Image: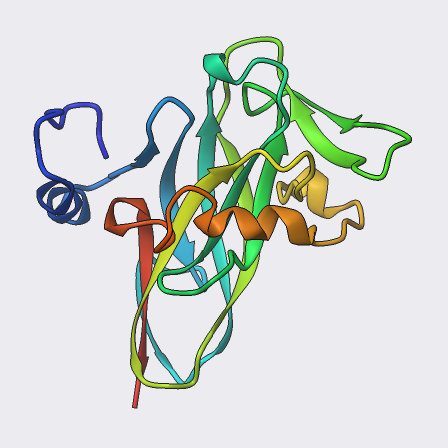
Amino acid sequence: MSDHMSDHMSHSDAHRAAALTPDAEMVEPLRFRIRNVRIDGQGDVVKVQGGGSHQLGFDVLHDCSMCGNAVNQVIVGLAGQDRAQASVWNGKQRSGGDLKVVNAGTDVEALAEDNPGPAEWASVLCDLVVPDEPGVYSVRARYAQAYQGRLMTAEGRAIPQPEYEDVLGWWKVDRPEGPGPESTIGTIVVES
């Protein structure tokens, strides 16, 4: 949501306002912001014929001073699913900066961004799989701190990376129903 929105709006009011506000941002308080969501190269709401794989792209600004030296991730998936489908950003406190290998030489080694300066917007891409059943599917995002995740920036995608299963399990770690409506960054409508 945009900085100009008041903090006292309810989540549903704020989401409705965000959906109607150009350049709206989704915010994970004190951790990251997301803007410029594109599904299949279009906007943040698309209608598709049948399910299957769809490309999700967006800009993320991770700026988490409270995260200390933790390795942080941004994960994405569909509302109502048990796990996230993809990890798209992996790094230290602030997005941008140079690529590095974190936890080098251990079984939780991963590629990450490490930015000692001000946080910078980073563009990421991944694929999400939508069921064939007609319906409206909310695309959501949340944070994780699972030691390793993928870095799906252009620079990161140039280096082969596995999808780390542990990070996908953070989808419900402290949210039994998974990320809520306030975490929605896009919508895929599967038409019959």
